Image (spheres, helix red, strand yellow):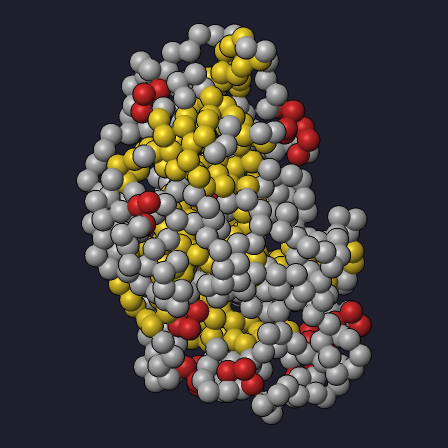
Length: 587
């Protein structure tokens, strides 16, 4: 656990004020994914000790001896001075944005063959936007190029009878991929095609240019298949598993046979156990191994090791169960989250070398503006889990249960006064995110959002993130405008004052916007107003602690430009506790 200095904490007991401080716990011409960069850094550092201990042992490290000291935060020097905010000029709509950086340019690739690029993480320009059949920027002759996947799903079939369904790609530079001519290195694009809520498949394509076009290589995971011949509504595709790659894998000895758990009877797919093969994302572990995480609702989120040189999956071959609710399936891999048809899609895993954790994001609920779409966060010491939230809950569910209290809720449907004059109002249904740890150590969260006053459009948003004292990434209140956090923290007079306050809670917000409350952070370290408690700031950094009722939250103070037309420079705070996120904006 990282140590972030000492916290100034002021509490009142029986009318007597006590003051205490508590300890807290790519270069070159071609890019490598942010995870891969970190693995290389870590693997090359022989002095870095292996992470040891359980979650409980880590928590014990946070319990430091308290010392009585005198408050003295007003004379500190603030390193984060106001700069001119990045000017907003161009928004884009890229559903399910997956981030990759190539040299000095950031790219987001999303569903429905939408993609855009940016150099400032605020203004974007499209490089692809739609299902152009011929001359498609990413896929060339779309129907011909992806016919290997379209044979199973996604081409004028069933739920997509009037068009195509190519969703949620993930792009990265793989230096180990072996091309047909024997040379190494290619941009890889993993994508999915889908015809129903369960009949889908994941394939991949390669290119020597990040903006494409990409050439189809193979289809590696299928879902929605049955034991015998069967057909979906408005479809001529025989769903029998014999029309997937499974018979070939059995013949090659890569699978030990079919698994009866895949099926419900002979003409149905058991989507309580088995996943929907969509939403792929690639990441690397600390040994440089390549993994794919994928899945949506149905049987949950799965992770599968990949062959770096070929891009193919390394199937487990045999099925087994673990004692912590995960399952290992011979074909699909290891279930690390969800299951039993519980909501959860758009998985994204990022490794952070500073904390030595793999962080898993999953978005709950349906993706429209009124169903409460919201991002959740877990973490693990290994790529295959178990992934736990801040309360110790396993992301892999034990059964068909409600799971709103599983996972840290990153944000819900929210607004502040800064949004009042905006035509779209506040944000709702923020989700299907990706994340980036940049070369300079900056962290960012990417997602698409819908809007309070106009629920139909969606746009990309990017927020800065910071690691709190408990090694959880907390998300800045407002979108990124290029502001720098004060590494030495902030003066007391910069913090004390009246705030708008939002507690994102753990609930599913549905069509409602979260209530904005009013609180005051007092000079004596107390919180008054619609909620009461105490607050504290580390003596030498931006780290913050808040106690509200019986709950403790760990986060940061961050002065940033808000999202009003005037782009006001305001103090904010963001913190996580008990699986909830709280935000504050100084008035």
